[in-house]
Image: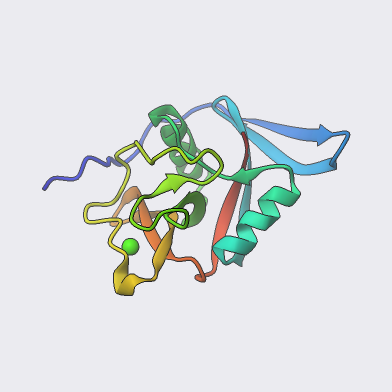
Length: 156
Ligand SMILES: [Ca+2]
């Protein structure tokens, strides 16, 4: 079956935004990409659970992709800035095995951004979703939650 994921070539303008919240204190630099604000951890790698907890400590969540516009904005931003993949997303099937959803909302992953054949739950241990540049295609893959990956937090 042919892939529906496509390479991304369009560029967008981006705004760096320092978000603060009186209850939380100063936040790390969040970047506005499209209509939402993101913190991109480009160096430190964590397992999914630790990445999740780190985002929560910032008053944010791991990134979700609810619309095609959000997906295109992020992958375009990463390409434009030559930022390496992969990154943890909030996607997982930890709530109901075999049913991947965005963790903060429980909404099913409705976008067709899976790499062909994914999620494939290799060896029965892949329950957390990473997005990566795979064979040139930005795409979603289920991975072992214990794998160490960079991550992106999003203010929902
Ligand atoms: Ca997989």
